[in-house]
Amino acid sequence: MLLVRGRGGGTALTGTVYERGERAPSFKGAPDEDAPYVWVCDAFYQVESGGSELVVDGEAIRVAFESPAPRGFDTREQALAAAKDHVRTQFARVGVPEADVEVEIEKRDPE
Image (cartoon, rainbow, N blue to C red; front, side, top):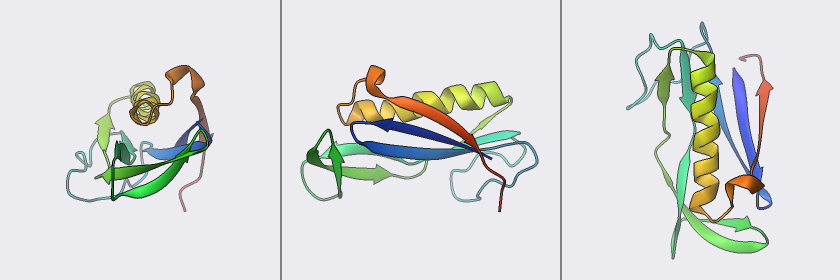
């Protein structure tokens, strides 16, 4: 599995790309089990009240989380491109410019 971690505004977000032969989590909305690469990550957006507190660039804001966004892909490159785009989009939703988001990929053995 590959962890795709974005860092920006003093916070981080990590999602997972499950590779060919690894078992991706199974839940409502998950892609077809036959997808060789599966990307799973939370999605969030800023809210005025409720939600959870998140500190971005030293300022406390409130965010609400959507259901995880699982997506299936045919190639590793497609999955990683979508993962990077997803992470950058989440930061943009809370006001962190794309240029300020660092994305790293870490290979992990499934446990």
